[in-house]
Image 1 (cartoon, rainbow, N blue to C red):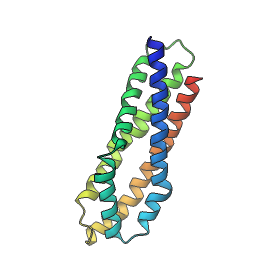
Image 2: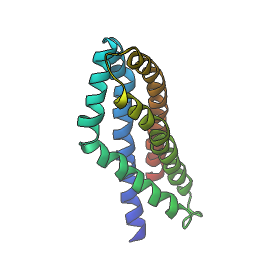
Image 3: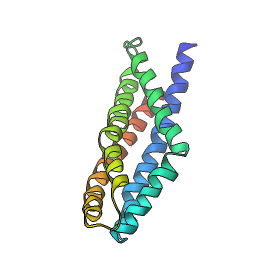
Length: 160
């Protein structure tokens, strides 16, 4: 029974990691590039809207937090199955998601989103915030993309 639950959690963690990697990849490869081509005031307004309307009130939060919860359970469960060959992949994939996706989001992307939320789009300070935001947020988003993809790969290996 426990083994079946771990297989299901591993599968769900793989799906969630892949889904998150896809979202982050889309932002890194074309959404942020498109927003950077807009005047700062329009880019700020668009990203503020994305952060409030599209992200906070969507399935994104379910996938983001649900995958983190599944990874936390897998990481803890790994300690009770350390003698199994695939457990290192479960543990490493879980840590990659929890640190490289979840913690990076909390420590870097969320504070940048809060700073952008407070920015006045039509001001010089708003333009400076936007310029910093575009560089820093996108950098950390690349980290999240790679971490989610690596976690996905490790969960796939663990399922084999």
